[in-house]
Image 1 (cartoon, helix red, strand yellow):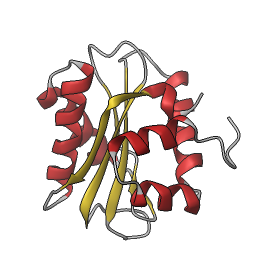
Image 2 (image 1 turned 120 degrees about the vertical axis):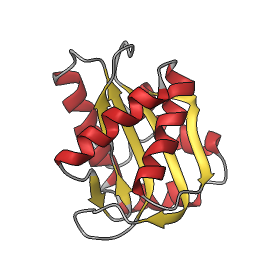
Image 3 (image 1 turned 90 degrees about the horizontal axis):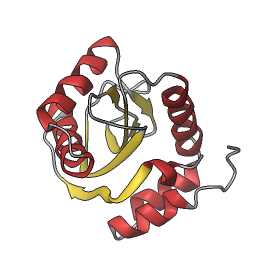
Image 4 (image 1 turned 120 degrees about the horizontal axis):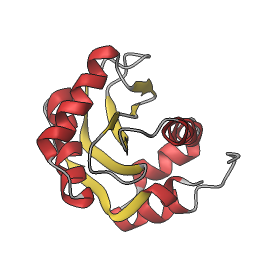
Length: 154
């Protein structure tokens, strides 16, 4: 499985601006609502509920917010790259500018966990993070994540 298997071409938003964590998650929810055909408010509620358990900011300016959402048929991803990093209560206390959000059906467990592990492995690679930050278009990010086999075993 690659992240590209989870990511529709229209599920990438660049140059997004948000003053804080909640607004950044709201951007993710808006993209998810549009691309996945689900209620953006329900998505935001799911993301905020998960964040209440603990921050999904994994470090190095990256967050992997995730939620189980009614109406999602399989694990899906949304990518949001922020113009200006926001405080996210990340493990390393660094602000976040890259978010790859995962959404799973309410009954998905193993598939959801495999997807989380895959995204985390890929985003641990400094060269991938740099390429995501330097990409000039949503299409470029989609291609990068669709072909992200460099250095990360499936």
